[in-house]
Picture 1 (cartoon, one colour):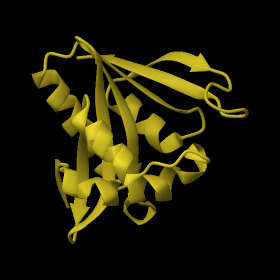
Picture 2: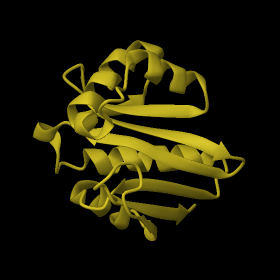
Picture 3: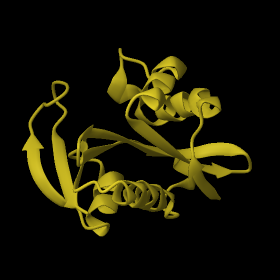
Picture 4: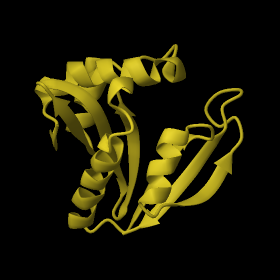
Length: 148
């Protein structure tokens, strides 16, 4: 397994992996190839985990202010979970942000997403906030933060 920076050529596969893993969360909104390409051109950077020439994991970060960034769309396909891929993707994003002199990183996840919560806590994030039904009815969100 290899982790590398994503390119525009990866946009279609990235949209597919996000759809497979977060599809229910984003309906009726769809993460399309065009949306991923748009994010890549803006202030976002993507990293992908690749195994046998197939993208099996993804993370995106966005710089939202001079020294503030957000982690978004951390996904790992089910057959590959619990092998450290999500942790390694997150570490790669954090290292990149640290080199950019980002002061603070935030990440939001559903309050019942044990996979993401475990990774964030293991990497030194702390719970900064709780948002009841933040994006959709019935979906509570935890916000995590970490100072670099």
